[in-house]
Length: 386
Image 1 (tube, rainbow, N blue to C red):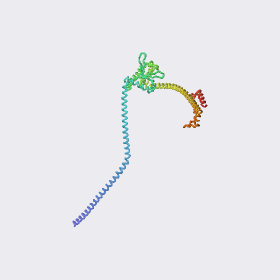
Image 2: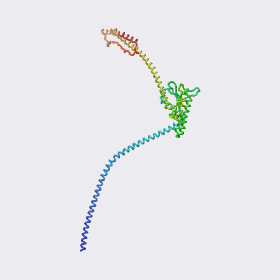
Image 3: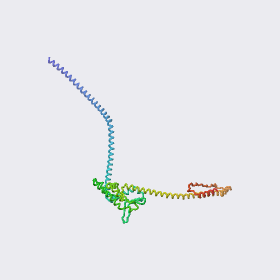
Image 4: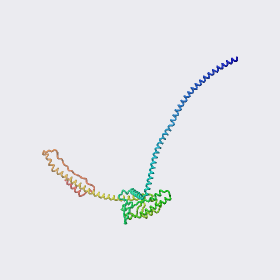
């Protein structure tokens, strides 16, 4: 019995276990179905949320990056403009560099050329000619002459670089000197002691040129002329640098009757002379105007006589015409008109003739009136009326 009960109990438990297994299987199936549906729903919701988030992000990114885009475009334009300016600046710097290089070569060539005595002399003459033209002396023909020479009693020929004529018939002698060797060497050196020694040597060279120019005594050969000669130094610093290292140089030049002149000093001197020439030409022009006025007045007087004669002749001709018309009308045409009364006909009638009665305007200017001629004209007029 116990075994039967145990068997029945086992069968009931088995049936209960099977029912629970079926219920558990159904729950598992239901759970799998719910999990699958939940997964599908979550996937759909996730995809939709992702799309919405992407759209929102793109919208926000577009709104946020628009100023950045504008700034980047402006930056790009500024960079392109900067690049063009950089290219232009690079070209300008290259042009400046080329110009400096050319200037350096030309300066070097000029320095080398000035080392030759012939080239130095030619450079001084060219500078002298330029200053003369800039001073306005070139427009006055004959105000200056170049390379004028004169022979002294011993047969020695003196040839200054230029003689400038003055309005009073005298002249000023100008000679160009270029003491530049020591000065150029002093400028090139960086040694202060050597620089000082070269500048003193430059002052000595200027002094020697003054002494040599004074020994020529141009004022005794070109007369009349002031007892001096102008020593033209074509560089502005040449004489001032010499004075800085030889303070007695100015007094020495004055004692030697030599006037050192830089380009500016000579320009002022020549412009003063040009002004004097201009004043003289104005005075000459005034004299020519006075002579021309006298000649014109005399010719007007002759023309006035001719006008008086013409008026007299015109009045005489008018009076003669009126006398002729009066005689013709009173003695000839009266008889001719009687043919018409006798039956003679013609295609054209004899017109009535009127005297001219010429009346001329009497001149008011006293130069155009002559009492004798006026009396003759009045007599002719009275006779014409009669």
